[in-house]
Image 1 (cartoon, one colour):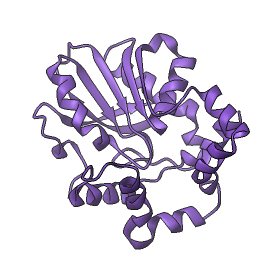
Image 2 (cartoon, helix red, strand yellow):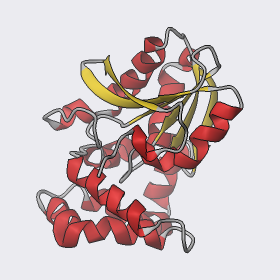
Image 3 (cartoon, one colour):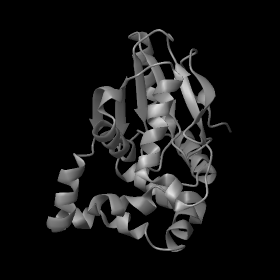
Image 4 (cartoon, helix red, strand yellow):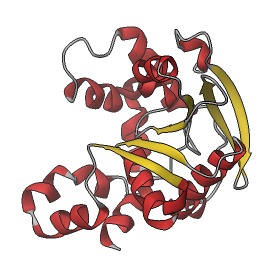
Length: 223
């Protein structure tokens, strides 16, 4: 089973590799190279495939679309050490990805952890962002406030702290063929959202992923 652009129905989509900010990223590219650029950033536990329903409509609307596997995920390079996955590095990845298309800016859309990266990009490098689209993550200051002051939000964010523990998260996530992630995906989605084949692809992505981002998520909340 493959986890590259061959999963997509859009015939213009292709798997490419971009060397940006000291890391090699697998990037699905689609659409007219002269079209307005849109960059779609996935969340956790995820990879470019989460945007499979949006890529073709954007291409049909005339956009040039780039969908990277963020560093550590799926087919992108896995760097050693937690510092390699700091948000400052993830943001620079996106800036240089935009530049790799010969552009100064792009429409940036982020979901989940990708939304957190998108927020940071807009705050640090506003000139790189033409339009910002955020799916299900509030402004960092608002998120930090609620995690620190709202017990209900703190309870819902239990997994953020769980991922700070040594060894236990890796063991829990890998057991029973990544059942942890399968339950998370199905529990938070409408019935029928994920087919068994989709789940198999996500499990393979998890197998290929060395994601350190959640080791830093709590630090981001407390900054």
